[in-house]
Length: 185
Image (tube, rainbow, N blue to C red; front, side, top):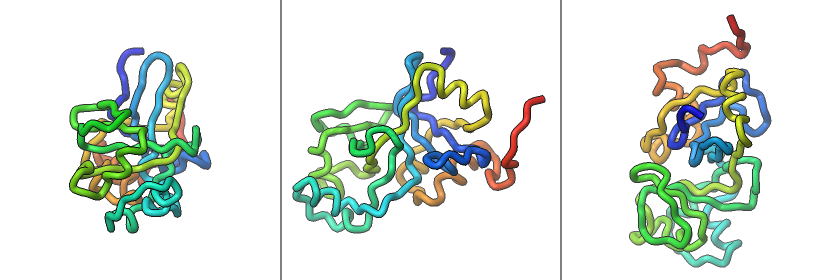
């Protein structure tokens, strides 16, 4: 493998009509010669954070939780919660993905989200997207995805329904003008 796509966005091409990935933006958390793992960052679910925390018996009274949806992170292990955030505070299972971007899979972070003790920015997802060895590279060769280095602005500040277009704009293109069919010369 020549280079890793960790800390990049995968932007679904308009021609990718897969149920899970249609118009998706995936933040790549890990990519190596064994495969890739990422989180879809633009698929809000009907579940609000306040409901998820209530289900888990986690006490957090932040008003932020009532207006923030849990995101569908991908079709693999749909019950697995993951939090992308911008604070290195000492939660049980936190790994640094890129300078200033972290992934936590332990529930202790959920007690702090939206409070002064929590990360300033976070996305909570259920499930993740995974690719086996060479699978993502094959999809890239088939023109299923565009790639671009990730930005914190799109990750944390851009509303989920605007992330697909905003990520494509990082490449200087209007994704809506790309044809739904692809060809190889």
